[in-house]
Image (cartoon, helix red, strand yellow):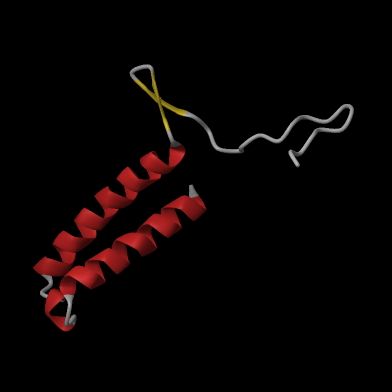
Length: 78
């Protein structure tokens, strides 16, 4: 059963701001994913430079876990 607004109340709307790029409406999650990707690429470069990648038995799985963690934090705090 769909939710209905009571008299005098606004309907159910999402609290996320719309992202418009050149007139194209983009989902807010896509913007969060791009921000997380940029942060991840910077951190990955730092990990390689400090030679910390050798600490992980599966660096690709560790990288995926790092990206998912960063994406969750960006989604939570932005």
